[in-house]
Image (cartoon, one colour):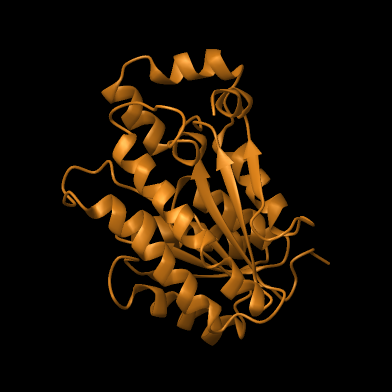
Length: 249
């Protein structure tokens, strides 16, 4: 028996990278998972196929979280396919794209996160959990400078975190907990690659400063661990290299 049997989950932005690994690890623990993608349906289908090959349950759902019907589509898929939604992992983020408009980072990293949580909270039963994934560079942006290329994303993600934390009393009244997982730069992610391209040597410099950087699979495992961890609503779980950020704050 998996620790998450009976759990209906949504993992936003889960067709690749961290989200894909989180979806597969959740399914391995018994959760039925909505695998969300924005454009890359074949990638999402591969994640679903891998989950099903392991005996798990999953469905791929295309939805742009910044669109008016994005959150509703994901929630409907969870309820129609699994009968329940009691876990929401907010993994989708962005803002370094050059073709999405100047305000896209704020739309996705703050506004869409709030919309997703509010819509999900209307149907999630007591005992449900919401997990918001961020980075140390975003979580500590108000006190610790980051790379120029990442600053708009960092500030928008911090704005999203603040907006979600403001919803905690409303969520707690419904018996829903919200926790934050903050990670260092993660080896192999699109964001790390783009940052290293914009600031050559950024990954190696951060690796030396932190001692080591987590891999995608290692970070995903920490996210899944916090899903069932006995921590209070509003808790922040730091994964890798946070000590120097805390010291500078």
